[in-house]
Length: 221
Ligand code: AMP
Image (cartoon, rainbow, N blue to C red; front, top):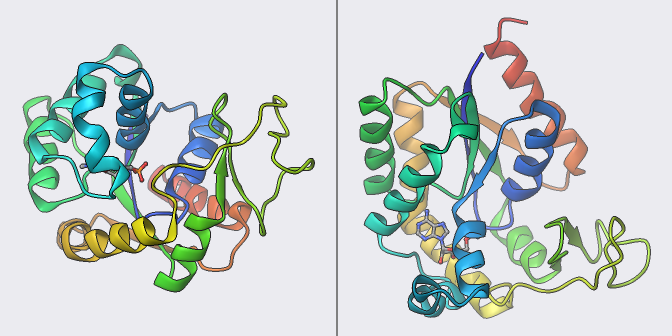
């Protein structure tokens, strides 16, 4: 049964980690607008050069651009049977844009999962986050360190820190989250599509289990 899920939560709440795990266990594509935009910045495409200053300072890109990128990605064949949206929608205009896009295709979001983590924990998690540039695996220096310091467990590549994961930008991103993105939680709540999980101080496995329970409940089992 096709399943279209939105993962909500502040920066560093664990959306990327959970989306990667669900993509693996459920076989649905992981659609992360942040990953798509970062790939443009890293390959220095024309779009990448234009958006890098926004991303490095923790500001959101224009809504029309985010909607356009998502519309293109969701029309690829691998998204026909569902997907996990991570990092989109991030504003009310984006949520409405997604609604309109899906309505035109006769589709709908099944539910949105909000991963709740307090602000202080978020800033700590973001500054301690390291990523494998090769496979995208996400580590935390304190809570989920690699076996060998600074090296990805899976492919032996040196881990990197995202440019926007410094404390100052982390706080800016959190502010943007509260002002612009938090209303999206309400948007899904009003439609009866919101599910919440506590992501604070929990190992990622516990959060994954909770989300899988929500998926099972939706599938009637
Ligand atoms: P993320 O990897 O989801 O934390 O996103 C990293 C950065 O990409 C954000 O701080 C924004 O600059 C940009 N970005 C990602 N998704 C969106 C979106 N839906 N709307 C606007 N900007 C976005």
